[in-house]
Image: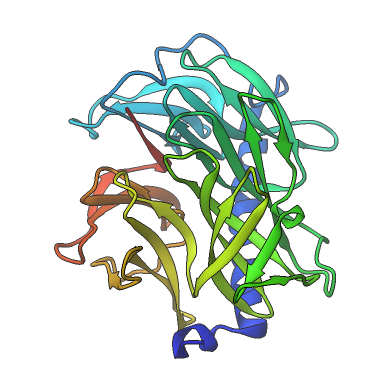
Length: 331
């Protein structure tokens, strides 16, 4: 275990995870206030299409958290707004997912699956506050992570639940905890295991994610069909696979409570890593604009903004979208 990984082990790491969960819960509460009586994910006509290349999809923080879109070439231009309220959004190959909250006496949280015309084709009820969402490059597989209160086997703290939907077969994996985990080449089981932050490879069954157990986090490589995962290395959270499939951008625990995470890029062939030029803490699952640039959301004062930074460690962070969060490149 590295010195950085060890510095956030045990109780400190769990408190940091709980703090992130509270941010997600705050975002959910915001959507609840803005959703209205009709339900946050009731689709209505919109000018946004998920098969329109050269667009950037995101959660518009300035209009009750609706799904929005801008041209990649002019991100500061006019925004096209939909009628969908989302805490997290993502899309690929004409398939979208909106993690949303339906207002009721007991609020209900859903992963709403969208077609290329932004029409709802399915919804899956989720057991906690929205945190992460991904769609595979082909559009077939959809994943989500939520924070679950009271789901820890050893304490009342928050934990995570990560699921996967195969849109072709309709099959739902309710929790990655049902898969077999190989740690150091051997089957591993523990009641404190938590998974989050799935990212899919070009082959739909192949994915990467984060697992946490015994106060440590690990990068895992998984196979949906085989229902197996194996650990690759420590101190990797919220991985996101590059378009060429050779690198992962991820957030790495620093051991500094004032700046808990820093974005790094991992070269999968050599397992060498590069710290990116963004030195502020980033609590997000970054996305790739292209093979050279990554995007991520940050809580900046009283709002959230989307930033970009080169993926090779050079340059400097650049503000891309104000009052925005959860970016996804369409096409």
